[in-house]
View 1 (tube, rainbow, N blue to C red):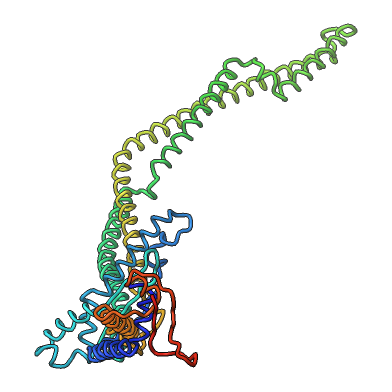
View 2: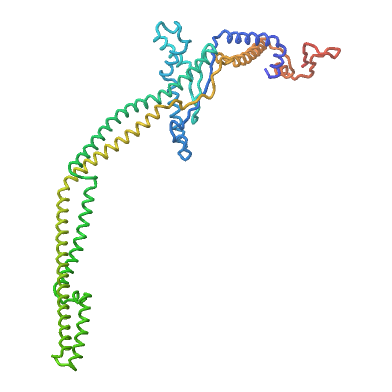
Length: 453
């Protein structure tokens, strides 16, 4: 049968096509109407990845690694939503699950309701997206929306509890450790103070101070030795340059020279017994006596300076030896002091670390907001998700039309008719000469076709 024959047959059997199509369409629509209806409410959540992992939004990081981190975080949040901690809380608080149909005891109702919630709840997310989409199916649209909103609210509350509960426990543990470490720190500090007080040590760097003092004494001793050697060299002779360079000696030498010149002049004209000559010689003798006395005094001063320099040298040497002996005696004390100081430093560092961890845990335990926010509120759906009425209607229409056409084609095969010229030529294996298609004597269309072969 050609396509034109089939179209002609369907046109002539249109009543059959319509009747069969309506019957099939009505049956499928009736079947859709009698099925139990399920309504699916939907909602979505936006997870704040910056509070979960700062590396997830690092623009300079590896994109593939960031996508993997996002999927891991979103997968963890989906597992939390479907966990017993969330669903059992919903089962306990939702009035829809508190009737006897879910069990005789409260525990049975919770267990049965949790299983229903897990089966009816759909949670998913697209790859690389931080949006979680939720869907809950129930027989009542209002109940579906209310239950889904309760699941989302419970999840947000539980998420805050899951984030703050470990931090609160950590803060409690760190608080206890802080008190214990502080007691150890105070005990170490007290031991150090008692040891310093018992040994007369001020400050933990006492050896450095004593070493600086010994170094200064050694420098002073070297300088004193040089000064003492110079003083001994000056004191070896009474007519050395140090004595002759004295101002008093030089002044007396000048006066002696002047007086000696005066005596020499007088001796040319006066005799030795002349009173003027006697007086001049007596004055010269007196000046020479004063010069000798001045030289002796200056030499004595040099000797005294040499003795003083020697005493200072001996004193500095004794002080240096005493300081060295003190440092030797203090070396063992300093070692113990260093050990005690290291204990204090270690306990202080431990105390600071524990205190910092306690502050961090305390701040984290005070978090009052979840790292996810609701994008839209679940509302009662207008159309059921099961059965899908638009899909059923479309399928009923297509199947009804197909059934009607199939019945018409089956009847045509069972009782074939010559309806078109090509069909006639094909059926009789003859050429069609005249085609009088539905024309009567008046030129009007006729219900039957006649062909001449």
